[in-house]
Length: 166
Image (cartoon, rainbow, N blue to C red; front, side, top):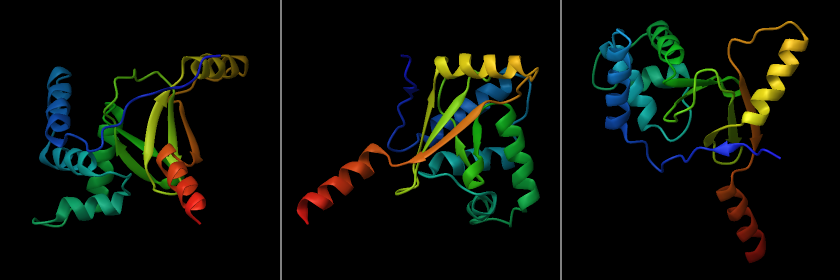
């Protein structure tokens, strides 16, 4: 059986390295990382949990003029298309993607209902299964994203410890 392979998620994003990666990716593709896009990348890289567009706009507006939500959505759309950001549909929120998966791979989000954390994984077995399902129905997917809600290992340990102490 082919299990999903979890990508390690650092305790804190290295925001400077993530911005540098975004700049290099854009430069390599002949795209422009505007100040607004750079600000969005930085705010998402600094966040430990997914951010909604309005929360992101608020963070991007700190210490400067207010950033409109429509500008944030445009920046997010660009960042999603180049693979630097993912949208968590069930949360209507966004996360920085620091993983080296291909744009055509299925992304599996493991969303903790207790702490709000999100881990990201890929699964070649799931990719194959989805390809067969789509092809048998004459469907060509554009993006393959699966979201699983539950409890992360840390929250399970905390709950187990709390029960044991009670």
